[in-house]
Image (cartoon, rainbow, N blue to C red):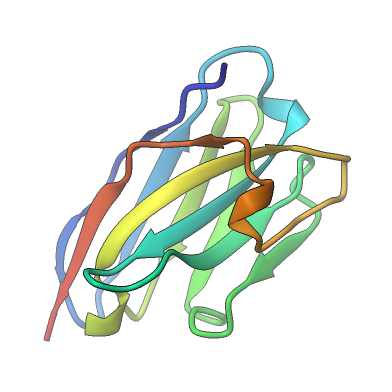
Length: 126
């Protein structure tokens, strides 16, 4: 079992920035591709970004491309989502997810992720 713990959420004004860390304690972090998803009230779960096990491959939803950056620090067992130029439509609960996969694999499909964090609220005010 892999535990994922998100932090860093909160309230920010439109145009502002937030960074969401997701920690995965234990020795299995480098065996996991990591992803971020979000769910706004009344809407379906939406893919945001993903990064491969080594960090060399990333993949973004079109809605966040150029504004959000996913990265990982394997020495700290942590994946980050840096969110810049935030918009009110970015308001959602953000979930970190982990996928046992090959070294270069990234996926936007939630069904491929094996473990999920508890979620953290991000609210962007206009």
